[in-house]
Length: 129
Image: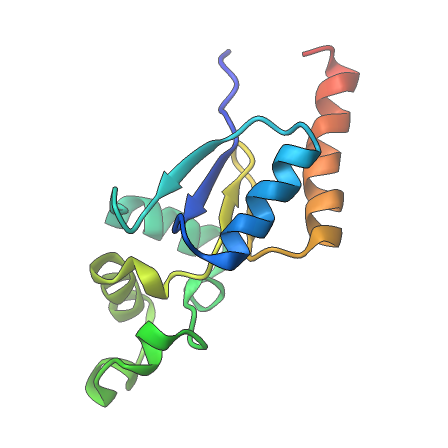
């Protein structure tokens, strides 16, 4: 069975992304970076994330891009509408989304990364992989 690599999704020049990537680098965590502003993001990937953590957790309502949306786009949000907005304008996806091979961590807080990524590293060491 092939292990899925860690993948961090976000936007290259985002300050939060820079902090998250620096944390992963300083802890020796190997990962791939997917810039969804330049590479895009599929609806299937967004739907999968939404099924796991909920579309509300993925939608960055605090960011400039969301605040600049027309009121009609912000009203009556549901999963279908939110996923369409996120696919059309990836800047409104909360950053980063860290996929630890099947488990997602949305946003960056060092203590959460230490707990979630640390758990993965420890369990890998215990399993001998």
